[in-house]
Amino acid sequence: MLKPEILDPQGQAIARALPRLGFEGVGAVRQGKRFEIELDGPADEAALADVRKMAETLLANTVIEDYAVHVEG
View 1 (tube, rainbow, N blue to C red):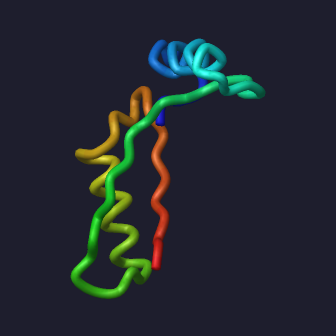
View 2 (spheres, rainbow, N blue to C red):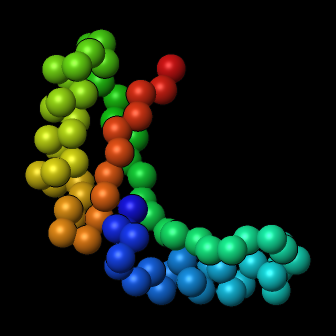
View 3 (cartoon, helix red, strand yellow):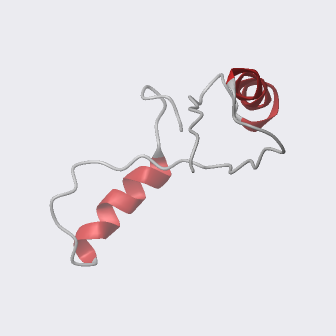
């Protein structure tokens, strides 16, 4: 996701379009991207540390974006 202080014109465009499509009650929208990574082994702390390093090194532009790592299933 873009950091809160970074302008998000795509999110603003989505927020303006929602009422025209009949959706009310949305104050703001932030647009982002998501990666799903399937691990070969358990999602232990070492594996999650590697995924965080992947995000910092390749997947996120940490100058303007924040990232979070979540385990599902």
